[in-house]
Image (cartoon, rainbow, N blue to C red; front, side, top):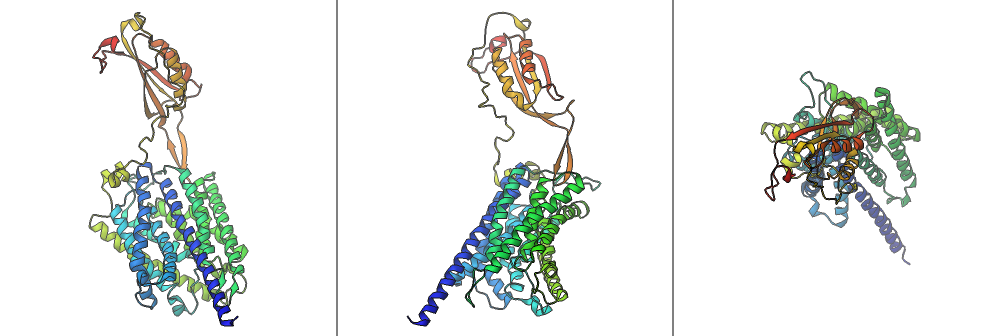
Length: 551
């Protein structure tokens, strides 16, 4: 067989394997948007969940098309290869475009978590358009595509999978946008002290974290090709190192953040552990292919440890309301990992620690300056036009209703009373007697929500199954509870209760009181109270009956 033909078939096979690998990594990175959606939705209040989910959907939808039509062309112009939009490419070029697009959209979606709860949707979408069209393509044109930092410093800028180019840039953009927008209402008091605003679902936040961690293998390991096309060599050493350092840094990030949170508050904060896991991943993303095994422990541990400290600095001293902690997770962790490159590199990787550090520092400064300048200019323009932030009334009501006209949880807070076995088919007794001295009585009880099922059963047992239940909150003898959100403690002195109202005429009110008390009592403060009040009159809507007959 002709040797040229054999060589061509081998090259085709290697190219096919590499592009298949690229597409698999691309799909993994795309799946990270599910993680971002869950993570961010979990960290906002229930009235803003739909808005956060919509922003994630539109980040991808708007950003990926803009990157196809404009962004890749701008990147080419900056890199010196000319403006070539995605639609002028070929089949393999489209795979390259899609691979670049998922990185670009990761940078874009990071911003949404920082401006949650107060940014107008139109402003955010417009910013996403500009980020995908210009801001991010200029960064990649200066670095991955153009290599200008090596021209300036004489040493290449090391960022293997986007620790600074993607995550650092996204975290800095988010912090800048949040700074221009200002904090959410009630986030800070007049004396400058911060109020804690917990997110609505820690479960969502942790599950989103784990989905992101899974997708990160596409981000880091997927960045490494399987086969060196030029030499026809399997890149097993690089793949193994990237997989190892990514995993170790991830684990150490979670432990580092949890340890610092414990030292600060005496408790291992769940959200800090989750955010620290991500910070460890961000920290290693710039250097997973060159870091020594022990360096992965250093990078991940430091990236996680800095998280509570940087978040506190941003919140307490800069007074910036970074809702989802995008800067300490993506910004400062990305910067840290990028700058640590020459200090944690495996033997033989770095010739001069000083020269390599200068190149890394130059890249960090250049990307930071460009990102801050452009992001601040865009959001200040929105602010000047009155289009950056929703109105105070809309912010109070929640962005789900004001921006989308939906309620994410239409039954949120309603008691689950359909299947607790408390209903009864007994007919209310009408023995013609004169209980309650012939009067109508209303028995009102404020009790623990978890006792509702037992109370319904007890009321049915005394022949009084008709009742009205309302979710309420209040305080009495029950001690206040302490809560914690991202390492900060807050007090909850309004406890969740249910108010049960039962109006009776032919059933002695005392029997109803005794039934409720017997079912509601736990012996602990907070069991509640029962009130009995006279009712002047009553009318049954269907029949028009009045007085005791209506009841």
